[in-house]
Structure formats: C-alpha cells, structure tokens
Length: 149
Image 1 (cartoon, rainbow, N blue to C red):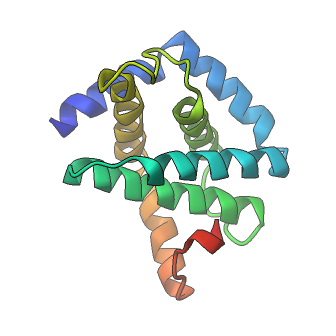
Image 2 (image 1 turned 180 degrees about the vertical axis):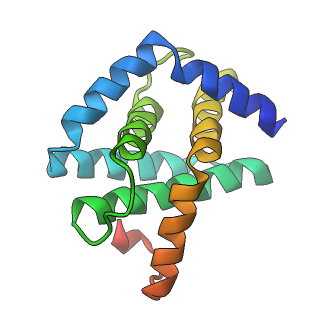
C-alpha cells in the first residue's frame, strides 16, 4: 500500500500543477514571513486531520518534522540540507495547503489521497535529509512542541 502511495506521489510530482508549486516555493524561500505563514497553515492542516491509520500518522509525523526543519533553516540554526530538498519540500507544503489541486480536497476521502501520495513520495525520496535533521534535533535535546513552530 505505501509503495502504491509513493508511486502515485512520484507521478503527481511530475504534474504541471506541482511544477507551478515548485516555482512558488522558490519565491517563498526568500520571504521568511510568508514561509512562516505557510508552515503554520500546513502544521494546522496536519494536526487537524483525524485518522486512526498508523501509516498516515507516520506520514504526518515526518511532515511535521519537515516543517520544523524549514523553520530551523529560515532562522539559520540548521543549514545542512540541500536547496533542492528545501524547494521540493516547500512545494509539497504549498500543494498540501492549497484546496484546489489535482484532486480537490473537498471531495470526500479521495480529495486527500493526492496529498497523502505526494507526502509519501517526498518522505521516501528525502528520508536521509529528514533523518539528518532529526539527529541534529536530538543532539540539541530539542523537544518538538507547538511553540517551536
């Protein structure tokens, strides 16, 4: 099942709509205030989703970690991440918070399938970057809380 989501996410990452989000992500990287608003919106969307599926919970946790990574990148405390990973990750967050995407979010159940697929692909493709950040957080005795976002 997870491999199906990853494959679907890979397909979505090649879609014209997602490529537009990549362009927007590049513009946001130089605007910390707007990027902060995106992080807050994406975080709110992730924590508001109520699902008992352990796979979804894992995706949600990793995406929340990525949000903390972006926050740390913007404030200059963590820079050990490639610019490409940052751009693609921010594009995934933009896609996540935009209600009108390839499959609109207002369509019950399947409206979030493209979001989940794209997140699964991102996590699979950029696991090393996310793992490196988690190790950095651990070395700093970082406790992820709402106040750190």
